[in-house]
Length: 107
Image (tube, rainbow, N blue to C red):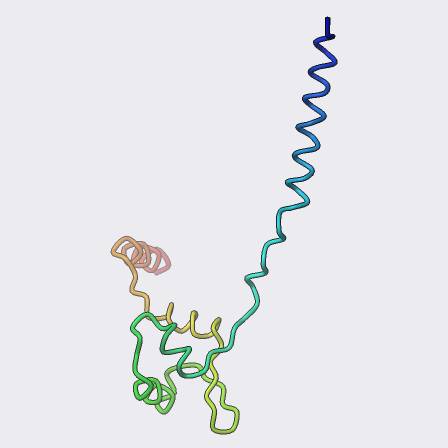
């Protein structure tokens, strides 16, 4: 008759070997902190409103959008565009009320 502890030990060894295989076969995560450059077309496709290039040129001319110029080429840094897009965010009623309370407490 087989020893029950021996069978358990064999099963644990098999599980441990399987976990090691899984650990070593899992690909390493891709670094997502790498910034990305957009040209005009990339920016138009990335922007939530999908603006036309003429609209983006207007923003560049008005100085409202962060842009890098290389000769005649316009380049946009994804992180800067993300920050620029976040600036248009409107506060919720709760956030506005909290800001009012903080202001009144400071006076």
